[in-house]
Length: 128
Image (tube, rainbow, N blue to C red; front, side):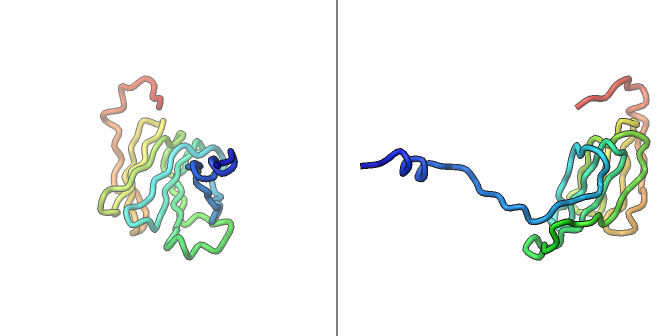
């Protein structure tokens, strides 16, 4: 005979997650994040107008409970809505409410490679 407790244990599809580390650096809400293709970095963006790069390395090597920012990228004049890595991991793109896409040189000096504004100049409002 099967008890209710046995049935819940056998059919429970929940995952048990354990926190490895906390990423502290943004001063306001985070709206997007993206793992680099090699999983060594996370890029996050926020309504604080910043993109933060976190060096994760090998996830099994995370020993610190609070991980400091690796790089803070300040180039947008309004909140940053999204981040994405290129497939080769050489560039990171960020898009902001300031109607610009910034292409950052990833893994180099993290400077701005390009700013794209032309397609967005006539847009009156941007939402998710």
